[in-house]
Image: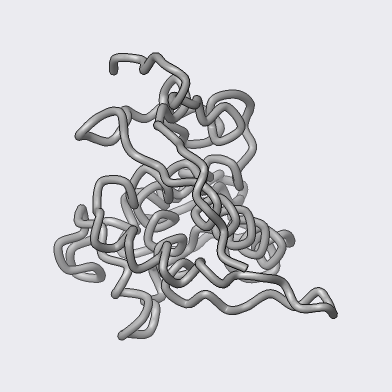
Length: 203
């Protein structure tokens, strides 16, 4: 990817360029996907236009943006796999797993199963607006070992992206998504490069 130049160019440093911060990676992929889908981006920007936390600290639901975050987490779950240790011998789909074995579950593979997600490689936030989530959607894990910070992470992503979309007009520097770096988390290789110009904020 060619790096941009000029006063309008901004590097999305905090969003997946360094470290293994999962919320930053989730926001990076959400913005990257939105920039590849201008019609969806326009809807989300319109929804965020009047965004303002309430005096009691409450945050508007922002259902369209929330659906885009969910879909980005489906396609690029920051924690790409989870491990579990078998506490007893068990048969899983015809495979014998002996007690003490560590089993790795690929969330990326599960989130792209065609039997659960029609056209699984396509970015389609409406999946999370019109239909219930399949059991195969696990970006935060599930059960007693699920991510304790799930609700905080989603709140943080929603607020940060709403403010950034409300106040800055973003444009991509490439017609394609950045390649993945799959280490502890899945993040854009080299960070996400975009152009940004300040918007006039209403009110």
